[in-house]
Image (tube, helix red, strand yellow):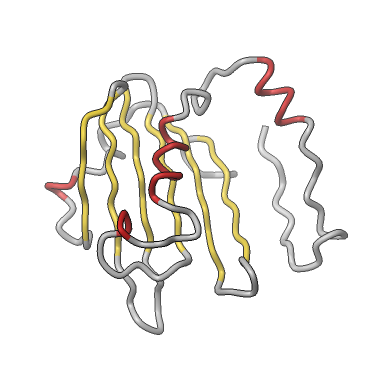
Length: 151
């Protein structure tokens, strides 16, 4: 994501002709300024944190605003060596997203941020696996907007 702090990926797609869906995953160096703090997030419609083996896992959400915004879910891992976000928007959020059927469930977002391969250092095998992924390409998918890869 050029010009943005941290490293990450942003995927925007349509699932079965439905509304636009977005999945964003970003990894940062630990930074208390970027941490989601439920006590300080009065504007959030919902926010819960719990301790996990590697740090603090937070699920925060903004609910649907009719005719404007479907809402979004942010799952964050604040660990000693990294801060990881997974953000989903698409299926309208009405209440606690942990109890809703989202096309990307909260449990999947949690699994993403808890994956220890999402860090500033990784194995050669993971790099090779990433390089083996074929380019999506606008020619194969005319509705796709091509975004330059970031090294």
